Structure formats: structure tokens, C-alpha cells
Length: 113
Image (cartoon, rainbow, N blue to C red; front, side, top):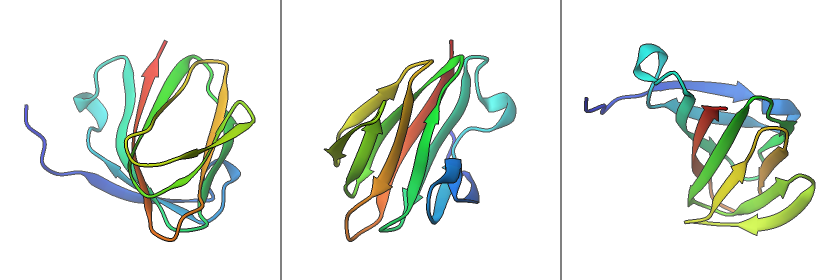
């Protein structure tokens, strides 16, 4: 299968974050395998964020495409930028804020455990 289109939606204040997360879902419904629940690109405008949240029974990976931000890994905050990959395993928490002057875009994949 080759997929060249996506379903786009906007999520305001995602996980009690600030602003709007623009989400481009590349795989939806039956296109996802039983272990994948999300495969999408997320874009945050400067100052926007995804609030800290815990993953239960699943892991999430962020892969930064462009922009810069602060990533919270179980409460420890580090600067992130293009090429960085962050993993939040089941039972852990994470969040991200766009601290740059351009959009922060990243691929996100959620896999059930």
C-alpha cells in the first residue's frame, strides 16, 4: 500500500497544553495495524504545546522534523530540534512546547504494549 493523503484535524489545548496542535493523520482506522494506534505529523506554532501526560499500556515516539522546542521527559526538560527522537514508554510521562520562532513539526507514532 502507498498512502499519499492524510486526514487533517486541529486539537486545541492538547493534554492541557497551550494553543492548537495541527494533526495530519497518515494512517487511520483499518490502515493501522493492531499494535499501532497513531501515525501522524503534529505541527505546533511558536508558544503552543502538548501538556505533560502519562501513557498507559502504550508507548509514543516523537521524531522532530523541523523547529525547536523543550521536551519534558518524566519532568526533566531538554532542548530538542530536527533529527531528535524521543521515546515515552508505558507508565512514563512527556510533553513538548515550541520555544522557537518557527513551527515545530514532528512525526508521532503510538504503539500499544
